[in-house]
Image 1 (spheres, rainbow, N blue to C red):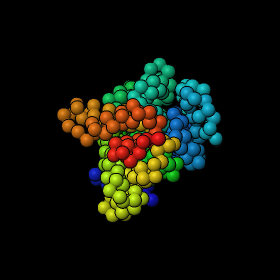
Image 2 (cartoon, rainbow, N blue to C red):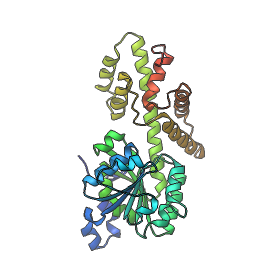
Image 3 (cartoon, one colour):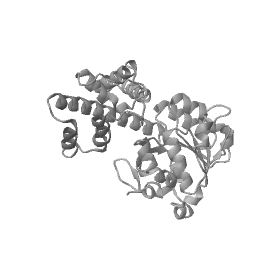
Image 4 (cartoon, rainbow, N blue to C red):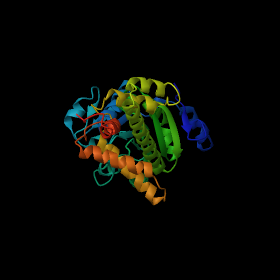
Length: 329
């Protein structure tokens, strides 16, 4: 399993990226995970809980916070903070939050992370949010001499628990240098997208568009083959063991063919949010995305049909319903 920190499109190790800027003492300390000991985790949903448990297993002193005390209590081995201020002593705080408003509420303002953390502390945001809010948070942290790294991830909660995520990291070199050993422990590979934190979020939104449109096509094709008389599992086996053997085809195609839409790894409303953010960036850049627009509307249709709590792979369910293969129950 690769543990290298890779620059997207270049394949450079983190040491290569930063070598010109580092002192000898800093170079000697790279990879020394004991340098950062006190880590906070904010947002203890499926992903945040997995991050917290893995960090505890790695020996970090972990402090956790969530608005739901039950989630906080479920993280065995961590210190529970009653409020954001309880994270003030952390060297690094990792946030896993659902949207722009949640990230802004936690990071900005008189009681936010930017106000309570010490200079040189680093905030890692794994949230899938707009590039704009990520840049706002980065600017506020910089104003307080703190670091900010946007590090959204590719993968689901199962990948998080098994450390198989792909991390898309962007931020100033000094912040990336400080937290790269921790980032490497979150998954199997870290890609450095650039110094502009917003670019990591743009990349994540784009990747989610690609995942969603792939699921849409997979659902439609499986519906066609099923209606034509081909067993769904045979169709899945042939497709995913020939030209269509990507992780997305296998993982989400498996959910579609088995109709495993609950419990959800990623609920439909959050998928709608991501598609909406991606389409907003596309509009700003004058990039037509008709396929993304179609999938966005199908996700909205899932909510209208009462499927809001299902996994976003329920795009396959909608394809089956539209083809007359299922009544949706």
